[in-house]
Amino acid sequence: MKNTFGESVALTIFGESHGTAIGAVLDGLAPGIPVDEDFIARQMDLRRSVGALSTARREPDTVKLVSGVFQGKTTGTPITFLIENQDTRSRDYGELAYKARPGHADYTASVKYRGAQDYRGGGHFSGRITAGIVAAGGILIPALKAKGISVGTHILRCGGVSDRPFGDLSADLEKLDGLEFAVLDDSKKDAMTQAITEAKNDGDSVGGVLETAITGFPAGVGEPWFDTLEGVLSHALFSIPAVKGVEFGAGFGFADMRGSQSNDPFRSSENGPVTLTNNCGGILGGISNGMPIVFRCAVKPTPSIYKEQQTVDLNTGEDTDLQIKGRHDPAIVHRARVVCDSIAALVLCDQLAVHFGTDWLGL
Image (cartoon, rainbow, N blue to C red; front, side, top):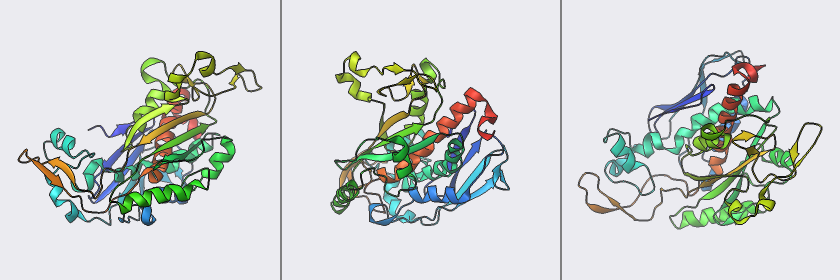
């Protein structure tokens, strides 16, 4: 398994859901970047399980900065984030050693690792491992902000309920900053939470769509063909558990347009060419064009549900049924939002370091 992403600014994740600890190592980040531990804690709170809409597993997710930070700034050496697992209940997963949960990586993990994997709570495949990504984002997002680059994500759709799309990006990103349940239209929160609650009461789960916008990103970053900016972002975004679709700008909507509708007309401005529309989501030919980067991620329903499901006994090869126990999220889209921000920040920092040089973020 490859656990590292990035060329210049690289993140390695480690740990298992019910192991001693999880975490991440962030390498290649320039020295001198301010580190706000309160901001890191706030980001972790956005990912943590809270209230009836999330799993009953309550982890404090306190981040220990083991290396790479001194006197409130990055040193330029690898930064290690360590997060202890404190609220595990491994007995709930005894049966899953040989019964593959539908929608989970249990079967594929068993094949790849020949049965040696830690299956408790999904092990290394668990969404819990994203805590290390969010911890790293707690440094990367402010580093981008200091360069005039903002990243924000809202829940565009959940349980059949739709939020409004992005409008005034400056105001919308400011509104989303720190929101526990990230919707732009406040009236949609209750309808979404009701849909999640209804699924939970039925022993089921719901999915959703996350929409992300990035402003202030300079033109000219990215490569044609095999390392396009969309390609690198998609590569990272598909690493988020449950993300099964990514589209940029108009995305699949292009299929129903004519060229006269889909093309983004150019006009001059004091800061260089701009486009009047942004159907291409801020990227042309795999390279940023200076317009906001906009993309959406489809998040599948949480696969751990309490309804009886069909599966196979991996020991005997026989068909059997499975009733999942334990503590699970009826929806993860609201918690995945900050993971999406953090993954995007990692890609942007890496791409900027490749384009402008490693020290650019710290200057």
